[in-house]
Length: 206
Image (cartoon, rainbow, N blue to C red):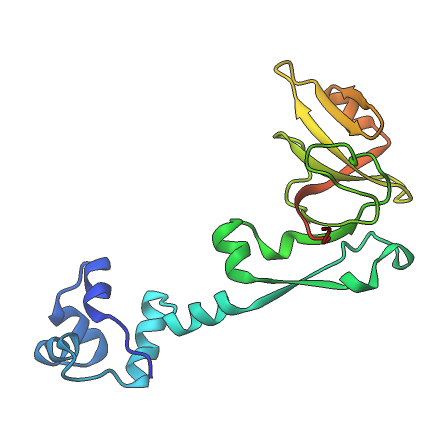
């Protein structure tokens, strides 16, 4: 049975041993014994503390961190364009939350359907599979983004940069570098939409 750190709870909530004892129905002396490890909390008292102080037990935290998140295809990708070898991509939740600092529910996988980034310094080839963050569906920083036509029939990946005058550049890298520019207003009226920012290329190549 997992034991809660009573001393930490008291300090975080500015409680004396006596006040915490009143909450739990214990004497000040018994709270002191629990803090010293001489006595233990019952499961009933742990439940009281969890509810009152919104405590998440370390065992629950570890269980969540060790959970594997299966990142699915973005719903807008037609079935015939999905690589069945990447039906779901398993990533540990602790990697997504602690290292990437991202929301697992906003992550999806998408296929690369053209060669527009094959000569980019971070090569992205046709038929690669990418993880995208759909919370980044508005261009507000430099990066590589996944976009689709508004009728959802064309899909592509491009490097995007923002110039000082709020001109947004889309870069295609294949045989040569091609740049298309938009103002914010023009981007709103364009015949495509940004779906998300590319986080990782999960395709394996030697």
